[in-house]
Image (cartoon, rainbow, N blue to C red; front, side):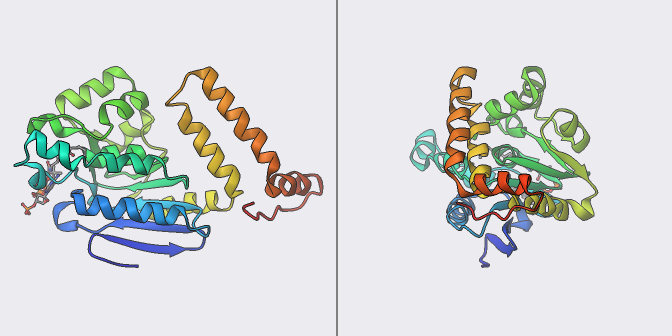
Amino acid sequence: MENSLLIVHHDTGIAIVQFNRPEVLNALNMALMAELVDTLEALDKDDDVRCIVLTGNEKAFAAGADIKEMAGATAIDMLHRDQFARWDRIRKVKTPIIAAVSGFALGGGCELMMTCDMVVASETTRIGQPEINIGVMPGAGGTQRLTRAVGKVKAMEMVLTGSMITADEALQWGLVNRVVPVEVFLDEAKALAREIASKPPVAVRLAKEAVLRSFDTTIEGGLEFERKNFYMLFASEDQKEGMQAFVEKRKAEWKGR
Ligand code: HXC
């Protein structure tokens, strides 16, 4: 499947979704975001896709929302566009999403990266929330997800100065899972995606859901939610198969049921 704003490749068990606006460092205009959300939702319904990799190119994951598209907008235009409502739908995708990041991940690009479940970054990655430099502030989760990921003082510095951090800083701060040479960042992300795709799919989905729930609830509510998902997995054929295979010292064969 190929079109102007996104390129989608299927590989065994995984799908790779690549932004295709290299001439503007993959600036996230509304058309691209609409296509992205529709694509992610369609992949989420495809049983053959067990993990999604979201990527840009070596130079940019995405340099933010499209500034030229927003520049002349009034507050009421922004209210009517309600473009960030679309971003909420990404959070509801049940299939794990790995961001494969290189070069700039700025503003909305950083926010999109943080909406993904895991991040593989190249050594050339530069991450920031530079909105302050153009008279605004993060609008798609930057003040919330960044603060939860790196803590108040670091988030405050990034949001109030707009300065970028390096891949190594992002690793130390817990914003990315691993940093690898630029030549292999996509391959590494695909390898991680394949590993997840090899796991029992129902357990993967319910586990992802439970981890994400920790952001929205108290510890008590989260533990309750986790427990229900854990019990529910005992209704799956994969639980019977997984435990039986362990007992019989053989490799489990997952059915996704
Ligand atoms: C529109 C963008 C863009 C963006 C880059 N371009 N970022 N266009 N929106 N966010 C375009 C440039 O205008 C230019 O087009 C081309 O991409 C190459 O960019 P250059 O600036 O020439 O490249 P370089 O000198 O290497 O500088 C790279 C850069 C810089 C440091 C990343 O482009 C930059 O500061 N970009 C803006 C980053 C930013 O402020 N992001 C936050 C946006 S607000 P032309 O036509 O001139 O060749 C945001 C709000 C979030 O994200 C709200 C939720 C979505």
